[in-house]
Image 1 (cartoon, one colour):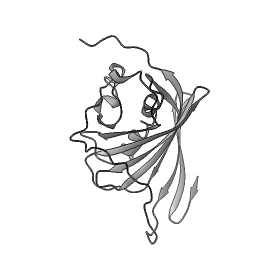
Image 2 (cartoon, helix red, strand yellow):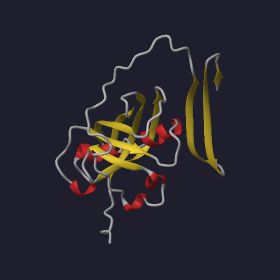
Image 3 (cartoon, helix red, strand yellow):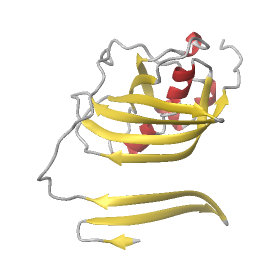
Length: 192
């Protein structure tokens, strides 16, 4: 769309036949890092090694989310819902074994903001994304990434939230924001 000396704005549209499936708008580039700082504060949570695994839902089997390894740093598991409403904050450690850590990985993890809806409401609920924005701060090597999810509001059938995505060493990797249509989970039959 616009090509600058150091930053360019681009758009990609994905279609199946004549149907538009997705649109991606991006600002790309780098500039000299003469001024820098990090003011977001990572929550104090247990390390990935001592955080319990997050139980996967059957509906995620065979999807990209089936490849995610997630550990609950500050979150309830499926069998703890429904329950009392939370404070709007929850945290997960996540990694995708076999997938190199990249901006794509951050975008995938940023799509987990609706996970926090169930935690905030204390209900077996989540959301279908309406929009998803990822803002990449920097990439550093890290095995695990901490998603510090903050749900701001759920009202009129829509949920709004954000996530700070942290490296294990405390470096802020990215922020993600998302709005979602809120829906109760369909109950799955018990596992054998």
